[in-house]
Length: 338
Image (cartoon, rainbow, N blue to C red; front, side):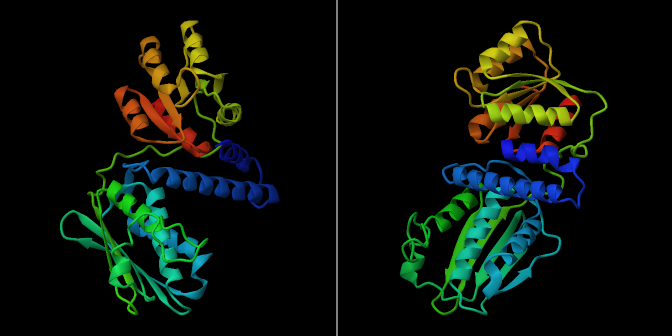
């Protein structure tokens, strides 16, 4: 979180063609990738997607193809068969991307040179969309196929697979109220079909777009920052300065409440969910008694059901998912202002 925040705060200070700008761009991409990996690991035991928004699965698969072309697809041919007019769905793009990546890596491992990997989408009847990941690889006999979704089952050599790949994919599909089917025969390849409930375009709640990174807002906010992590506090202070806001920064929930009781009247509060002593769960109800209407950004590295329920229980509370950069913070503060 600190790395991504500081990198996004500093990147636009330097010319776009400068070595420093390019370095910060690489740092930003690497930190964002690390954040997605951690969220993917956490999602294995989670029953609900971490973040839900309206998604175009064609866009998700195109991005997947771009990633694969730089790494895994050197020895096989990729075919994108994406249906025009694919209905959107609601879901977590990060966990879905990780699931598709698992399927693609398995498919490539099952093929010799010159095999073909096909990513296909289509609308299914009323209210469903389908993604297929198909390969021309070795395929699986029935006795292997029957165990394919079992956790820790793998046919790969020791050190080359954990046996969690397909079970994680299945868990992700379940979390999105979807269905999964695997068709495979020895010598005839494998086709994994993932079906998800679709939603009508525009059903998902829209999000106000963030202001351009680095643009100072018309009216500066005075923000109370409550976070026990020294690095995250320093990062938030840098981001807020970059956005033209002022702040009071404290290392714990007790200190944050003391500031409010002493008469501090912030325009917004950034409150860490997990802290020693009084964390966000304990602070938020007391904060609402002191400041019933102040906007609160509840910051957490794990947007699970507990965090979602806490944010939903109080008006004016938004979730700020770690790691975040300048644009994410700017957008949420702009929404808080409105």
